[in-house]
Length: 342
Ligand SMILES: [Zn+2]
Image (tube, rainbow, N blue to C red; front, top):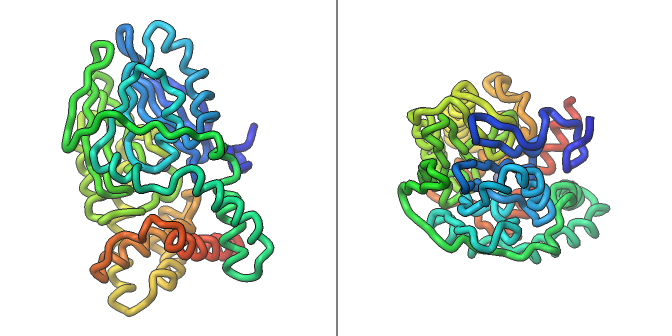
């Protein structure tokens, strides 16, 4: 079996699979950093693409795999589900005539995110700091590994040309697509795509299956409400932004994680513990055992930090490199501690 982009053994099969008639999922194992999924809905003479990849090379692989389907049904619509680069930085590869749609809040966030050149700089910095002692070295090695597989130096950004707020129905090749804004949760403007005629939901990064989710923005209550919105839809196939395709049980398990984490972080916050202390305690908590099989347990510290800040009346961790670097230093330290326990 081949390895993942990050060189780990595959935990599920990647590539293109038909999850319902004319509805395809493109999966990237194991769903860790930048190992994102996409979707294709093929109608009569036209198709819609849900998300592109973190770089153009990976997006070309996706488009090559779907070429046999889009020959008779060209991609006319692209939906970007949110502002993280691993869901839209490949947009320059889609047909020039295709419309690209996202939520207004996502477009605003896309314009504020660090551009590809900043990630190239960060990667160079991390490469030189790999040998540094202590937490700096831990962080540098973690961030180097996280960014290594991606060709950011060749990314030309193409921003969505249309936005909406709330809900919007798109019709592509005779099929309805319901675009439902459920953010802010993972990011400021998350949206999901429901294909009612197929009972399929592309949940984007409101759904992480088999991999620890990341709460960049919050509040966590909105993420739980978003999962309730998904569970209320007429659907039984759920394609996550990261991880393998699942059903209602996986959505419910993720909901249970957020409910448990929000309550547990509250307890540690009242006890006066820092986010890092709380995260360390929580990955050892018996309540965490249900979720301990997910990849990337070290991301718990990001989730705890965001919830912790909200309890202290603060907003999300700023998206700029200094604040994110401090956070990733803690992620890297927790990853090392978890590794040592294995
Ligand atoms: Zn993602």
